[in-house]
Image 1 (cartoon, rainbow, N blue to C red):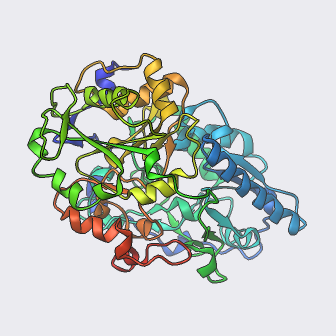
Image 2: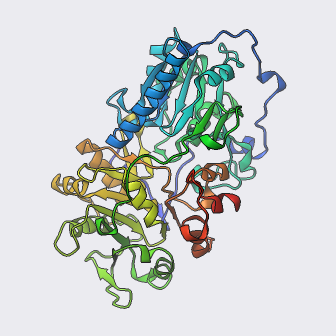
Image 3: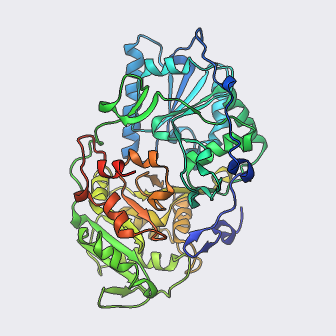
Length: 497
């Protein structure tokens, strides 16, 4: 393992600067030389396939709410098999396959899948908790592809412009590279799984950071053109179940999870990290947008400004990292200086967030458990690393999680250490899971694929760079400016894409 400093990397001007994940051949990407010959697709009319040929992997999480959701999805798959009078397929819950915390990044899991299923299976199908599967239709779809060849199937996403979350890859033509929308389900043929598993075993994974898993998995499989590209499958859909046509083999759940009423404002404390130089630039944006939705909110700075007001947290400002400031906030949260609430939300002063939507989401989680929620990143997952909540999208902690973190003696090795990664190391040492939600976003809306955002009701975005942050908030996060349908989709945001 590297030293802590090497683990952390560098933050410059508030942005992570990363090395290319897989030594991408940018000239190949930018010149558009990702092609698909007419011979790549083979329709096999007599390709015998049944449910026992498919291994379903639910991309589940160990938080109790997500375990329940995944078990419901597994029960539905097995019931469909029973209704079809077929022997049931294998349905795996990803979080329970091993003690390796990094299994969620998929690639470290491939050797296990290859060893266990290469003899008696034809396809590995990955799906999320919200993904509905029409089993009979899916079998028909998979039977179109020769199971003896290498296939990478999914609903394709692409970037319209180069983006930091994808390391500015394919800068001259970012839309040329396609990667799967995990919500629609995606599939690998067993021959491809076997070859990839051998590669994972023989060649250490080169990426330190896992940022956008669906993109990075696609890059690894493509392998600078040496592996298969993503084959689009129109039957893998992300439309709500109630709105889809009969051609879809997968859909998204039309109804939100049955979690009850939103948590009360009185149960949420919001901490905003700021500094003197941004008091006049960033804080006014918060006041114009989402501050009014918080009952308990404090601005923490290196300078006490009564006009805002800000609180001098007693930690000098740093140009990067802000670990000292974040841990001072955690300690204050447990003190008598602030109201005793169930949830702590820590955001940057350039985070845009919908607190009402967050209150809806938090109704699904038990605050008596050590919940750590946000957009999950990973560091060194293939070498025994750890997961962490990336700070810009917002970090959510139950009171129990904060108590356990501070009781453990976890602390910063310097004030400018990256707070989110230090917290991730501490949570990993404690055996506490990081819970991922795709509704939190470390970057701006334009940094994500349009089709990916189209089926979301997002909770947060981050950065004011080269945008009008108030306009972004009004378009994406302000509920009284959009029309919500019964399926929960944000139609205002979707139609303006």
